[in-house]
Image (cartoon, rainbow, N blue to C red):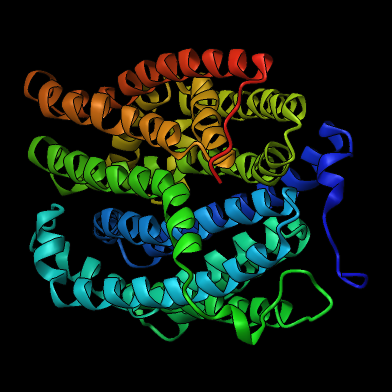
Length: 454
């Protein structure tokens, strides 16, 4: 091990400095990833048309579902790597890498085939109409053909971050954003490929980033690197990875159903344009959520390593700092959504009716946004220390216990407003439950009676 880099600083460096070191690159990367999606929406809205935005919004549930299977493998494996490094179990940490590659190819491939076969029925079920189906189909066919590339890119990037290289993980994400931003206008306007051009730009950027990531993991001087013996599925690694990854998987799966209910409710009470308005609101608010996810990604290796090393005071410290930072971010989202929604929406379209619909919806959605950061960090924290059952419960509480029932009930009484207001109601209720669970976990840490199941 003499020439290999072991991230022992995770257990000794000051927590504030560590969080800055890991979170800032992750925040930049996640912000870039969010801009990545926004760029597609902006160029599609301005270059293809307002109904194309609605068509793109219809793909969100399927994109969420694809992301669910990607996170099932990538996020779980990255957390497992952090914990194993903290336990100094380097052989297992290295074998996780090979299992990530095999699982992503297997799961990503099956998802692609099934989705392509049933694509039109799926999109109609999601709320497509005769005016929006062509846009949604053209975009998703390309995205699905590149699904394995996307899964491998995201999975390997997560492992790279957990292996002590947050700056390199950030660089890979920024590269995809820059390249996508360059290719989008070329493919959409110059080559006249329309919405297909945006999808091709997305996959091509991820493919080139994936090739770079593969090169990084071929470096034998790194502790976590490709080796012949690691490309065999190991039952315990697969089980632990999928167990930990079950939380983000179920969260994305629930988000899929949520978006379906939102799209169907908006189509029934507001038509195709209302779905486009939600697409815009979703992209804008998602930017702030992605920044919080960047904070989470910075917290994850620190919390996982120190939990594995039984340094519980350090685990608590990184959690508190992460909550403070996340709350500041979502408070900024509240300010944007309340005071300048028209300006934000106008970036995506020049259609006045669509701008008004999006602005009205955004003002409702962000009512309780300042506390959202706390709820997201808390759910991710339990996942980061391997307590997947608690993370799953918190993730599903907002989506299934509160949001979907609200979406089923409130629109019948309040129409389109009932769809929009369901979101902040669920945010408030789930944050209260997260607070109770976190308070209990703090008491467990103080008592020292903590069980590590990994």
